[in-house]
Image 1: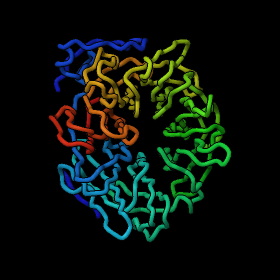
Image 2: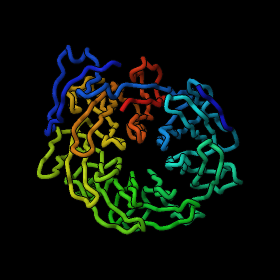
Image 3: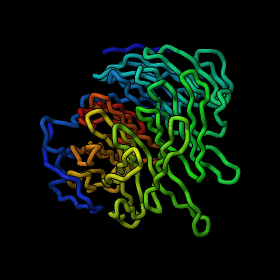
Image 4: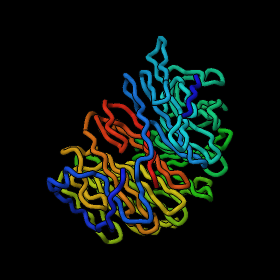
Length: 453
């Protein structure tokens, strides 16, 4: 069912990100002050433009967020109950003999006005949007479903919608030749409308291994890439030439079967052939997101053991963790690394040499602008940090205190940037939170927020 709907000043501080992994303790005055800190510049940046709570009586989960060329945002989410926003119903739950799964896809304009939403049977796992505004959703349905073009068998599907939410086609991934053991984690669309989907597939000898597949604009399988190591690919980015950058974590057996994980980045050419691979020098870490534009490939993630990059070692407190953003050029040469917060979970680039990172931090963490206030003993406080992608200098940072409730692995926070600069975040509200427009009550709800460049 298609649903229609239209409808903080900032203190400035000149900052340069410290090249150390120090944590600073907050004074009482700092704890009571605003958690917003930004760098000096020609105009205010990072301010909240609008917030849309996405709420309902069930438990919602975010599946994806993306901008199109017009600066409009598309979201995908799941819930076992009805979901609504300021404009009315967003997701209508399904009923039937089998435990229903329902997902929603919605498009919002540059001012946060909902343009349309669509409720469909199944569980959305990955969302991607082409430059022309076409929407791709990869998901699963345990009992089979009709998404608009006739019945599909149980399993994973690829759904394509037009800019206006009108159904274009839906196909079974297995019928397209995609391995049936593929667990999708992320997708990107190249300039020709081809879809690159990454995740992991099962190997009888190695277990789960990183994998990528490429489908053409009509859904035909072009190639499959499988990594030789055990692990998982969690993010992909396609450059202007159609070359694909894949990031994730590799695992290695150690004493008594314990596993360490190592962040990795692989470059594939447009035909799926590996050109180079880089692994970050830590015995415990993972990459969570990759983005590419111009002469920079950026990767974000986290590490819980010392990480060395360009002969600089970043330490970690016992039992703690740090987030990172690492930069490479298109040939794989390392350029810079910045560490802050507890973990980076998402990354997006714009055309003005900006990089926006979303992630988690602990109270007192330095995000590049000094210690940041947060909920004590929570590693789920939410941050937004804007960097210069060329040299990694922090432009501004914002922290949003957030409680640590439930399973952290089930919380997914997405970030996206318009080509013109404004950013958007789709995240999980674990308890009362203020995103810059007032306190939002409730727990285990979703929110969509728009932010200035």
